[in-house]
Length: 372
Image 1 (spheres, rainbow, N blue to C red):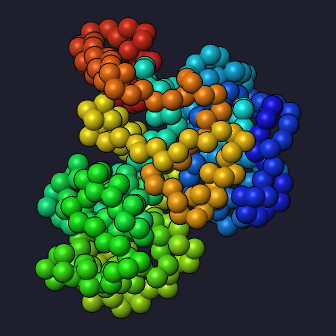
Image 2 (cartoon, rainbow, N blue to C red):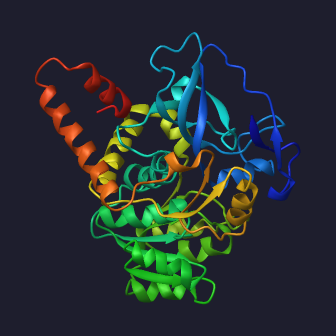
């Protein structure tokens, strides 16, 4: 099979497009034919050996995939060959096939396309966990999103509006901020050309922001912390700028604010029931049209090192996607999207009614998928 391989740690240009053997399954693993794979910032860190997880060399980056199950291990009972699934594989997704432990593989709801399935959970899951579970953001509060044009940042802009917040989007170019505006941001800050601290002060009438969601770190962290309101919450999501900031924590004392770490991957394993509920919430928002992934660009498997380079250079607005098998992976548009939403809505209504009597097999399967 074809795969993008990291044979030694380095930059995206060191990756190779290679022929390798199919993965060998263990008892509780499944083999997935990959249709689409999302590009996330941890992929950039993995190939440089800068992430908290350290896959052995050689490996393929790509931690969020969708596709079709080709084989199941002897110990897997709840999944079957030919089933459409999404998987949080950690790495291995930039390949025609990937093996994944079965507890990280989930059937795709009916009519959801492969692109949507592979592009939604990581970014929206992270942003929703940050805002809902950690910050407990309230309607009427002010949210500042640093790196607002990236995958998690843009998801936070949309979710902030859904949750009733006034959203200030901060990014590095006018083009990126224009996309944030389209997603509903109330105010915009270009932190490359404007004084971040002063703009926060002006936009909040001196009160400061209630919540900061920070995916970039670096030089933007301290002025944002200084711009916190009393009892604010600072959400540490990532360090896309490259530098981990050294914050003067006397500011947290003076402002009575909380600094909170956001690690959605661990949350999903430590608190699976809450994570399942969050996923159901997000599915509802998708079907109602409240949130929608912004696809920056679609790359072929052979082009995926360029996708990582664009991510590394902070050129990606929203989500970059690698498509391994093209036509089926593409998201529906126009009336197709509407039909998808109507189909999911109809299924959920049928399930609700069925809850009052014996559930048919298809309803049980759907409930198991999304833990309704």
